[in-house]
Length: 261
Image (cartoon, rainbow, N blue to C red; front, side, top):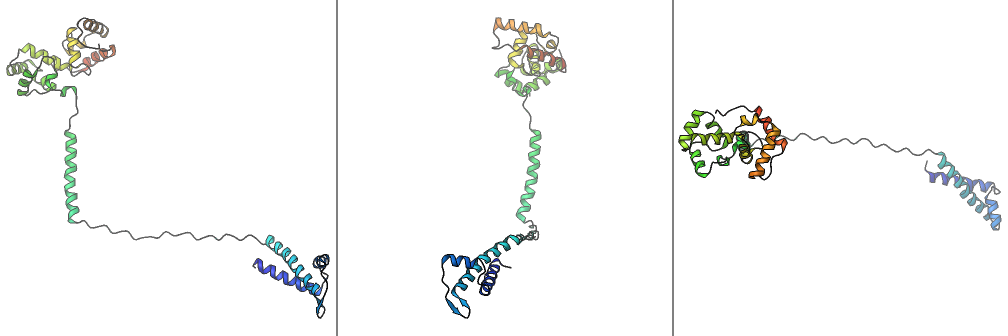
């Protein structure tokens, strides 16, 4: 039942009861304290009775209204039904057109071609450097070596690994076999990381002419020797640290011998 309806019913009920019982509190008490005079209207009903009825209806109507509000349970919240997500039919797969077929067919060979190119790509190492990097080989001998098929350091190692190969190459380049052997020994030092052209000359000054010689040396003695020689001849700006010399000797011991004396 609506709360307003309860108040209206209570008002009219108390108004009607007051018409029957005019002395029903608190209407009579309020009207007498205000000083309302009684004036007869019709039958036995006077203006004072009507005023008492209105007061009682308002007061008791409010009391009953408050009691009804406190006694009535709180309205339950209405649960909304769960929303159902709409289901859409799957979109049809587009049929391949001639253009897409051509693009797909042309893309596959390109992908294979890229893979082949990556496999053929060569990583840079010390042996890939030009032949002129070796001490003693200038532009003139570099041109002759290139004409003989020796372009990089690794080519010289392969072409001068044995005596017979060195004799053939020495004739092509028009150089003494002993000089060619020195070049090959210097190229062999390039297999050890950190030596290069600069330190190979320093090692030669210390009496280390080949990788085999280096593998037989004592690290402390060799380090002291190259320091003394560089102090005297000033071959390099900075002497390699002792740990580097130790690493060179360890690498020389593990390398396979490829240069024949």
